[in-house]
Image (cartoon, rainbow, N blue to C red; front, side, top):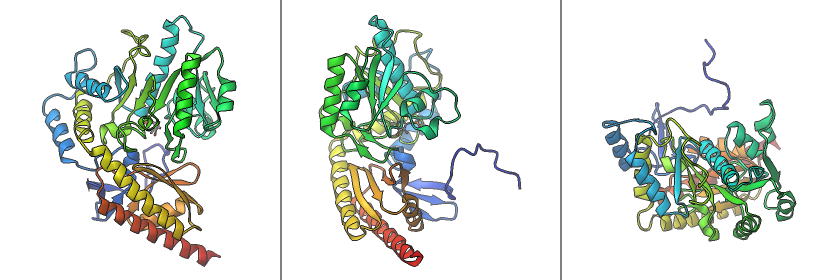
Length: 397
Ligand SMILES: *Cc1c(COP(=O)(O)O)cnc(C)c1O
């Protein structure tokens, strides 16, 4: 047989799905899985949400793409709504998280450039960070495994240990432009930055004339029970990257900015062919219709609490398998005592999907529309998977 024509860049699981509905996805053979991966926090409203399907198909019959050479009314509307519901005055639409971060980094550098400080271009980031896979965002993330073999690391990123203010203070210099941080590290293992530390970052940025860039590609759009996770700390950034959940499965990202931070982004300074096209805007607006409904955020917090408490009981029963549970809302992580992929495989045997992360964590990122019954079902499957792993551990010993 001919080898796959696809790049070998993914260690894919041996599963292919054909359809989905809500929190469930189904293979061609009719095997149903409980989906707590949600396309890595992307399917915020689950699969085949009727409102999203209607918005996309309606737009598909009218107009797909015109390019940013023309006015795009859906873009103006989604931008306006994002601004109204956040710190931002200005929005730039992209197709992905990495592009949203590229825009944020460029915006921060331009800000200092037009302020007469072109020497201020360096961005401070944190160990364990993940900001995407472009050349600049792998430099920002600073992870050796993603940088290796791709030539010189893009210049201008300084990394400090996670949540280490002392190291941060020593790193701020006359060339520093911004601090870039995920309020909750996703790939890094569902590691929340304490609210007090986020506030301190805000203060430091103000004191040193730096821009605070938040990467809310994973934590944003309701995932933690607030529209954006930084709201828990009662601070606002100058720039923010959003993607994943905002498109509900349609490729869509956005860079949000204050008017001040974005003042250098004048005509011709940045652009994209596909970003913000009518299809993406129809879906993005439809996602906001649902997540901005009264009570939606509160329901996420309530369900998240139920889930976290139930998981804590599983952790108590299986201290040999589960070290602890962390995260906020419906962005939770199980820190494993056994290798995380063993629990992931045991969960797959239980027909439940989750996502691995750094620090030996499994991420639980269900669609935000999940029901309490489905959470109970998930907890049961996690319980049974932990029991299965324990049984094989015993057999191996
Ligand atoms: C997924 C992710 C990205 C990259 O998004 P892409 O759409 O894959 O480019 C950046 N930052 C964070 C926090 C992410 O979770």
